[in-house]
Image (spheres, rainbow, N blue to C red):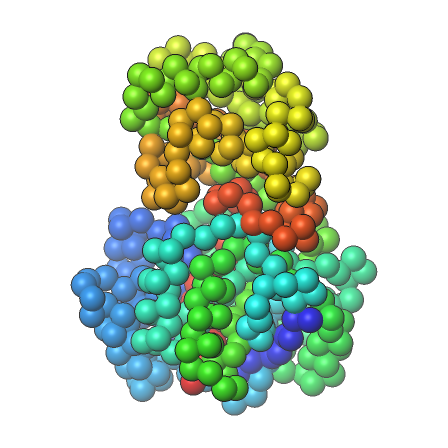
Length: 418
């Protein structure tokens, strides 16, 4: 079973930084070069300076030196008492609906993947794993929390914290997308004990941060023995939380050869019912049980809805995979189109050879209509229950199968590993 503990967190001294507003950042893997510059310009202590260091091979050591200097100068301090950290994120999703998602920041003992402990839900890439491992070795800290899900149908894990949240939050920080993060610190032994009791025996499903978790496993084994390095920083969110939503990540194709265009057309005609749409507003499929893909290309610029003709087609293409996996639109697209018609390898997909992703519908559509990409497939959101079913079957979904929004910011807390 997953072992969940309070932590003696490293965190910013809010008096030194003027709060968290100018020092937090999105996770490293969604920050481009321009955004990184803007974040670094906000404050000499913005977390991108250590979580996304710039330069050559020495950048990891320079990140470690920066963190050491912040601790020496009192910009970052460590709590004397262990605490749990409730987090409320007020946001408006890509669908335009306002929501609040509640989570709990804690440290979790690193385990091998398995039933009753911790499960992944997506495949990972080797490049980010190596990058995060080198940064962890240098800084000896978790700088960014992993986002994980657990089942709590009666709300028993959150209930002990409610009485602690009447006071103003310890800190608050807004983000460019409008999300407001409110963070509390809970030291009360009774509340901590009740939360731990409610979470005893729970299974965790990693929603975001697979590379960081696999880095934590490797790092723990490298050091061996027991100690703080056997734990990793996580933000735990109940699957039943009304603020938990999953949005799709759309697929884009580029630099297709003439023979690939022909193979793609043949595969779509062979495996899908093709419905011409009156306009592009209906390109986004609904998560209604049917396997549908929205499609448009830069040549004809006409929108279509593709519906898989028969589930048996997916069963044949994904033979050897569990039934929940064979019902994933991302897995069917990968098997029939990317690997089938276009003959892409796993390496091609990992390295984004002829493939791109877009989380925003309008952005994906504009990329095709402008000719920057040859075609786009628009995906339906994957229900949380389906994510859980796939993971419980021991499967890992194709990369970018889910888009959990909002992200959990980096810089709220750090977890010391030494």
